[in-house]
Length: 187
Length: 166
Image 1 (tube, rainbow over the protein chains, first blue to last red):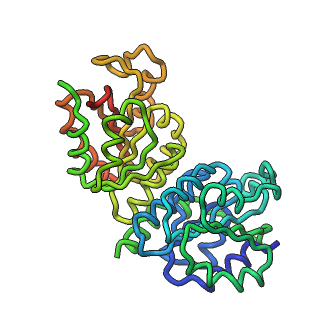
Image 2: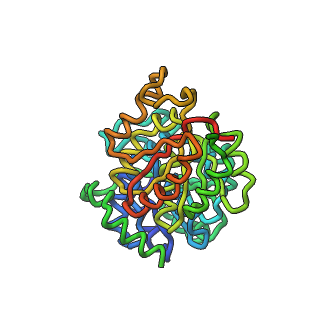
């Protein structure tokens, strides 16, 4: 298992100009680990991160889009795996931070915790590729290559909670920050 | 006068919409969605559940693309939380075309015999969402201005399709 913030720091070291859509705990950490006007945290409702990412990927096929989804979030929008596979955006990388719990909502286990195969679900839905990572060394070794691969790809990141990061949902869903994102992405 | 699907498609294009995000609705599938699926000027994204569409349209908006979500009123009711958080609070101009399955011709939705139809407009009013009934040829001209206003205001709009277009 990887500490989630350490796992995100690895991704941050390899990020160049990708759009990153992040939800819940991953988002709260990501905006501090890798601040950027190309961070999109304005997902508005649980489970919707992957769908926002699909819209962004279809609207800007020339830009890579990475989504940092949660396992509980993805379970709430499993159909999006089929929708994404069917739309087949080559520029979409769908990372799932699998911590086995609804961490934001009291850390109660998700149904099927640590038994559900998110790569298996994605492959069955039609994603051409999927990877699982449970160690930082392995993730560090492969992430650069994966970010260049043709999508859609599902990457299951097996994580445990990280250190303390401030929780600020008003910042995550801020329309002002969304407007900055919108202007940046349309440049 | 009869509601023509070809007129609706023309107005969708006049509103600069290039993406149609859709989940089939019995009122609009045959004469609206099926021709749209064949239309090279419109890209269709088929979704498994309607709330996905609200977020896909919002993502597209951020990239500068205009989209229409074509669904049934049951899907609208199923998507209330996304409509609340993503479209209204998130100030995204999500434009929805919503078939009112089973609405009696010429009867206002709030006067329908069907509970599921009677509640649609009051719910949209409670959420502060602009809506228009598209039921006859005279309503077609409402479409493009309503979409334009949604983008000007960065707010959602719902176009309720009151009868099956032909």
